[in-house]
Image (tube, rainbow, N blue to C red):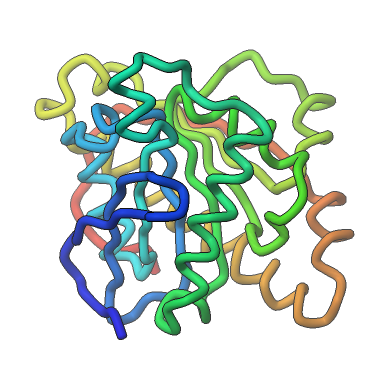
Length: 224
């Protein structure tokens, strides 16, 4: 049994990936938070996002797409099928723990991990993922392109805070609260639809893109 409200390190042996897990006692959703490498995962602003998600009842498994061996060899960030395989490995790890296996799953892709996670959605074995949040991913997306995506998707951009993350905690908090609220709105209903056998059709019909440019500070607090 695993249950902890503070971040704990994890090694995904099968995939060779490093990550961290946080499980609040009131967890309603599991978010896989995907970073291109450890430098992004350890960035203070993105760590703050996982703290706010936890305060909003979202368990998080944060991990790097690149293994330590990839980093040592300066390998490129994995693409498409390779990312799908690593996502499947992380999902399998979560499925072996009752505290996580019972939760509906959302995907949060950050920075250079975004495009690869979108491409991974075209591969099999990821049916348990009910929606995706892109943070600081590609802009200039078209409605036609979004409609072809596998999952309902929310796009969030953190503007000036990227340059001085410690000076702009409000921007990261605003993004985290938007992500938590959206996951509660989309992932939980999608999970319920899955139980009745209608989730795939619903996801295709409701695929959409919402962009939020967040820079103004706001007070810390859980999303209702």
